[in-house]
Image 1 (spheres, helix red, strand yellow):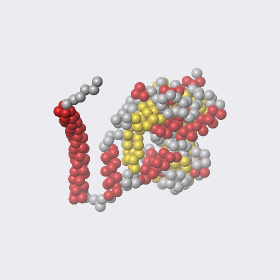
Image 2 (cartoon, one colour):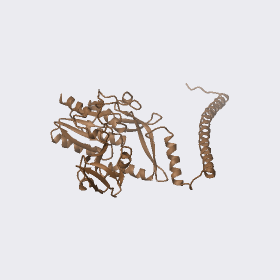
Image 3 (cartoon, one colour):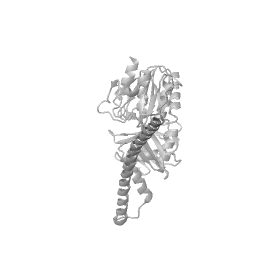
Image 4 (tube, one colour):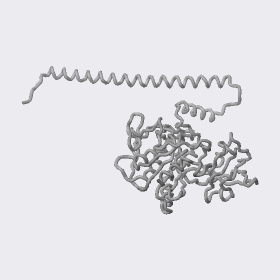
Length: 399
C-alpha cells in the first residue's frame, strides 16, 4: 500500500537534505582550503628565502659574474638532495643522456673491467671484452693502468679517472699501462656496448654475473644461460653482488626468464597512498635446475627484487651478506633545461607481498657468509678459492 506524505513534510525533508549537503560541502571545502593555504605558505617561505639569498649574492658576493646555468643546476640539485633520499637524484643534460643510453643498451666504453688492488696499490684491468676497442688496442687482463689522459692514477683519483674509460661518445681516451715491466700507451675509442651479463662454467655449475638490469639484460641472460646449459651446466649461481643499477621493470623481465608462469605476480608497485601503480607477472620462460644467488651489502634495488623473487618463487638459496634494503622504484622526469630528476615514486612488494618487503631492512641470506678477512672487496681480483662466498655456493650445489 502506498503512503502519501504531506506537502509540508516534503518541503521540510528537502530543506534538511540541502542543509546537510551544504554542511558536508563546507567541511570538505574547509579541509581543502586549509591544505592549499598550508601548501602556499610553505612554498612562499621557500621562494622568499631563495629571493633573499639572490639579493644578497647580487649585492655583496665577491667574485665573477654568475654562471646562471650552473646556479640553476645547483639549486635543483640541492632541492632534490634535501629530500634525504640517495635514490632520488638530479641529472644535468649530459648525465641524463648518458643515463637513458645506459638503460637502453647498458654500459658503453672502451670494453674493459677494472679494479683497484689496494694490496699492490695498482689499478688493474680484470677483463677485456672480445671484439672491443680495448682488445684491438692490445690491452689484456692483468695489465696495470698507470695513467689516463696524462693523469697519473692513484688510490685517491682512480675512481674519478675510471669514468674516462666509459661513455657512448665515439672519442678516444689515452691509456698508459704497464706489462712485464714495460710501459706502453694506446688510445682506444669509447662507444663499445659492454654486456650486462657474463658467464662461465665451473665444473658442472654455470656461473652468471649480472652487472645491472637494463633493456637488454633479460635477452643477454637467456642467451648466456642457454649456452651454459648446452655446455653441461646442471645448476646455476647468479651473482648480483655490487649490483644496483637499472630498473625494477628490467629486473622483473630477467626474473621472468628464469621462473615458470605462476599465479599472482612477480612484484606489485604501490604509490605513497598504497594504490597499485604497476604489476609485473611471470609467463614467458623457465629454467628448471637448482639456483643460488650471491648478494652483499651493495646489492640494491632491482638486484634485491631479483634475489627475493628467486628465493620465493624458485626456492633459490641466497648466500652472502645482508643486502642494502632499497625496496623502492624510481621514475625519470625530464626538465625544461634538458636535464631530469630521478625520483622515488613507489614501494616494491615482491612475490609474497608485505611479508617479503625488504625496503629499509635488506634481505638476510639463507647462508650468511662474509668475505674472508684480509681479502680485497674488489671481487674481480679474487680467484674462486679466495672468494669464499662463491666457493661456498659451489660446494652447496655439489653436495
